[in-house]
Amino acid sequence: MKEIRILSATGILGSGFREATLQRAMTLKPDFIGADSGSTDPGPYYLGSGETLFSDSAYKRDLRLMLLAGRAAKVPVIVGSACTAGTDAQVDRLVGIAREIAREEKLTFKLAAIRCEQDKVYLKRKLREGKVTPLANAPVFDEDVIDRSTHIVGMAGIEPFVEALENGADVVIAGRSSDTSIFSAMPMMRGLNPATVWHAAKILECGAACVVERKYPDCMFATIRDDHFIVDPPNPDYRCDPASIASHNLYENSTPYELVEPSGVLNTVAAKYEAISDRAVKVSGSTFKHAQRYTIKLEGAELAGYQSIIIGSVRDPIILRQLDSWLAGLLTAARDRVTAVYGAGIEKKYKLDVRVFGKNATMGALEPETSIGHEVGLLFQVTADTQELATSIVKSVSHIAVHYPVPEWTGLITSIAYPYSPAEIARGASYRFNVNHVVEPATPLEMFRIEYEKV
Amino acid sequence: MPKLWQVTKLIRSKNAGPFELTFDVIFKDRAGYEHVRDAGIISAEWFAKTYRLKPEVVSVINYDAANAIKITIPRPVVSGDIDDTDVFGGQQHGPLVNLEVP
Image (tube, rainbow over all chains, first blue to last red; front, side, top):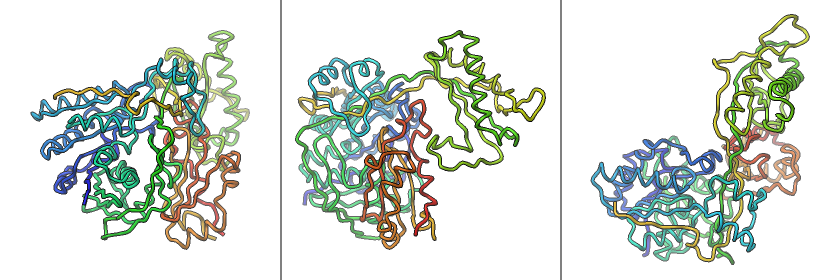
């Protein structure tokens, strides 16, 4: 019977897994070791700036164990969405870490680096040709947005991975990729049923997230055959049951029944989840519908401004009982002071906001609960075109705020507790996701560049 | 009358990508799931009212395989943008937790 065995090292490279679990999983003879290394979850900063969610040390620890295991068993190691956003520089960063590990551990391998950043001229041409289509709740995407973006990546499907593996890559480090493509490429190359493969890949891509109770990040293992796959956690303390596997389809997805990939849509309506032991689950019955047109999803980010913030708290019951009007007056006074310092016209160059913890900091204007407790936390936030301007303005806000009066008290009051000196904190650049669209490339490989090197 | 959290094993919210917010209500058992599903308390109308949206943009999906109800709405603010309050979208499910189950 044709089958392929897959070890997913962890849900996101850098978050970790137990070394003992990886060793145990290797005794099950996986055909490859995969791991996703990216996410848009932590926000636009990582795509916008090119910084990474985890430290180089954290990536190195996880990748070292994967490379050692992969080379010892002579099976490929495949990592997608390198270093959070999968920009070209983030691919280079992870490739650099792989080279260091190879040097330190005396490993040799053929490495394929897949770069996924998109050329602005190419995207503008696609836009003019009408080959760019918006997805749900998408912002406006035009040539100005393309020009403003610091990075735009295309989310690779299986094809660049297949190309790299067919060319004999032992290690594949890719930029932005669909989480599932990392795990689907080799099974699809071997000709297994796409529905089984994509469904298994969706379960595998979050590592141990599909167990009944995930106490810490860890590895996951699946065996894919043509008409079904079996998920069996390699950590003896973990177990899966049909509900935990079925529930995983809900995670970070707008529907549990459909998973959209570049080449088509996985449909799990008819999927069957059966316990085959007290810890392993057999899944069958999903279908896959090939799309009329092959599409690549874009992710882009642009600079939204530089921010400086102040954290403080209020405990005085007299202020708290008129918190909203006190804050409104405070903000007006602060804005007047900023105008006095910088002159008329400055109001267009910055944005001052306050968030009230203990009232509605989590849900903002949507918060249905109106009561507050014995204290609230305040976060003043200034956004401007430069860090210098943001910090200068927030210093003025800070002084106005800390002495802003209430009618009941006579004389100068100090109305906010600031935990720090200085009160203000420069937060750096803030970015904005600005694309939620798909592009139709002429071929599945057109938007990606693969380079090989002997490490 | 029990609250929704008392008949579920998980109520959570989370980004479904940076532009959408999704809610999972996963019940303890089939009976609780079917009772709440059929009572219709988790509806597009309830979400539209609570999250100040048009009912047409709210997707409510009953997911029998996991005894779960899934709701997806457009994000009020794109994840991580200047006015966003919750980058992961992980704490937007509060109003659901104490919903009364008839």
